[in-house]
Image (cartoon, rainbow, N blue to C red; front, side):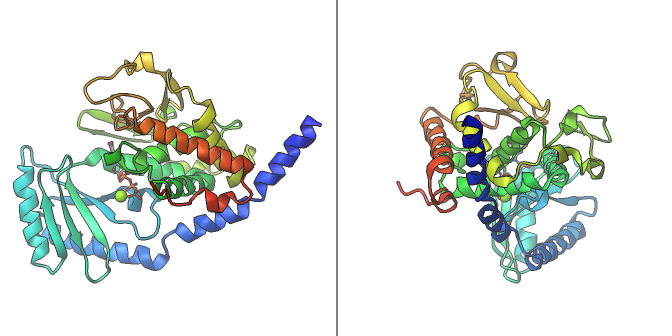
Length: 337
Ligand code: GTP
Ligand code: MG
């Protein structure tokens, strides 16, 4: 009887595959939108290299890592190999140049935690942030993009999770919840842990790509075309993975003792990282290790209030997946305070 019930549950969950996939499809940027992003990038690249021929412009964040939904802003990083440039002066100069080329709403935010220039392109309607020398972000963007190429289910899962997080108001680091980057790492970790595994641990494999940035050695296996079959032993479709993801964070994860680590493809103990207590503003209530800056906990923004909000949202989502008649609607219902 138990076996029969389990089979019944699976079939119940599997009825959600089609609706989840159509939500996923509706979130993907169109080719037209991607062409517009490219057009803006080319324009900005031209303006920048005219002024600083040795500088290079890179895309990072969701437009570069393949986890960007339609209508995302573009995150750009200007890499310039000059020791001791004055970032503020540089950004102000950049803002001047962009303004004289008819870009709109140009603003240099020189006092922000990550100083940037913001702008909007009236031709494509796309907004964009440009930061300077944040090269680690460019490398972690590549890592995420490479993971996405291995198994299509990662992109599906991450789009659904990001969409859920935005709808429920738990994708706001300034309110103590998690960044999109953190959610994607949680999805990668989750798929590394499925049995059979759906994703490998690229940083634990032979090195085929290696760069050293800000004294951090970033190396991993990036010939991901060779890994296209990696997850094929696991046939779980998207609905079961969404169900599993929320159940993991609602009822299985041991928040008190463990750190999730995409770098090692496993859980590591909080004690080992010395993340057992509050240090300064970092409370380590949910621990997500950055794959390259390993002293960096992406959960550091979460405080004793927002951890409760987050965990209640994971439980809400898991319970909806389990019991609700129409989870695909209820899951994404906007949070109203
Ligand atoms: P959306 O804009 O919400 O679609 O997602 P996004 O992928 O652009 O995410 P987010 O704004 O969270 O982060 C943008 C990029 O900044 C990420 O892809 C990372 O490359 C980088 N990033 C974000 N947070 C951190 C961080 O704490 N440390 C480092 N090293 N990089 C980060
Ligand atoms: Mg972004």
